Image (cartoon, rainbow, N blue to C red):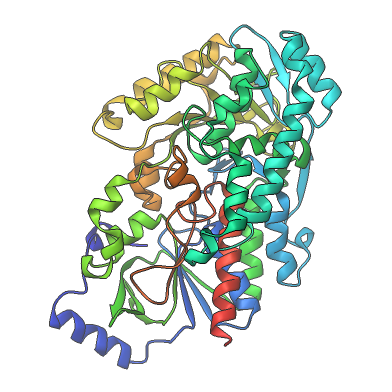
Length: 521
């Protein structure tokens, strides 16, 4: 989007306007649509627009496409730095289907079974599976009562997912009539928006292991199971029955496949380009001012954090409904502290996805959202893609993506002082759980919320945009169409329909379809 030199730059002086006019009249290429950001939302939107016959240019500030998902290769170890748990494969398949392409010609997904290994502090192991009989056997080993209620919970989870698909995930909510109607009201009542996820889970389960295992789904949208609405119980159905998938060659291959398709459709993708400002004239988008000159366009799609886009790319007079004071009222989502470890060992405890839970789960979220500090005893997630696919690490070695939930950036936690110390602590906690030797890794790379903010301009380093810790921030997110500037659209985790890789991909598809239909009129 932009660099530090362009932060907060307004439309400003007559000299600025004269410069813009000169650039525009000196042969700047007019584009039907400019997309800022080449993450999942931006690329999926670009493909849909280009398939409809529109000229599209995507501008990405990083040197490589992918947004928060980047590919790291070092010493024979291959890592995906960013999203690693792929669910809802149809969200990605629809990108290719609508473009008349066969997804398997661009990227190949494979289903994981078991889905995820859950390891609890007392040594209990539950491997999430599509097999309900096996799931109940595993849960019954520590709680027969919870096992007896598993089927009922999964049935409710499936019903919540169906309701979300019908009324929230598959449509834009651009107008008041889209949000405030009898059908939507009935749907909201069915998903009980005021019931917290943890409270819903307690209707079915009593044991802390089961509550943590399914409560963790709130973190998929950067939130707390003790604050977020019960709708996210739908992830039980999504993971166990729709499935969790790996990507051949690593998750980044999804980005590469979408990039290739976009280019085949005529999309122009420029990386290493900083957008300093979205230029607005008489309330309408006129184009973007970049470090490579002015680019004219009557339609701009911002694939980035809505709050950052408004704060950094729009002059205050052009964002009256998204003022600094209003931005400050939004609670950012969870961020993440990542360690990439390439180690010459294999670990029998690990599957493709493994989660190590602490003895108590709730204090982690008090630390993150109340105290805004790193958890004293965190949940630790490990993606080991080499488990499923040879060649992701040297022979006899493992490529481990290690993630700990982190608070969004604030004065309460200083990463400059704490990064090394906390990183060592995570490795020590893993060693105590049987994952040893990490301090002697061939590759050891740490990535903090500060780095996330630096690279992607995510508001306060959040991963998922705003949290879903309230009814309002879950169901009434900032809209996909700017209320202040005509011709400005938003895709990504902060806007509708929400955070998470497949949902952001759907966001791009929905905006692309809507914008294409409007421009064809």
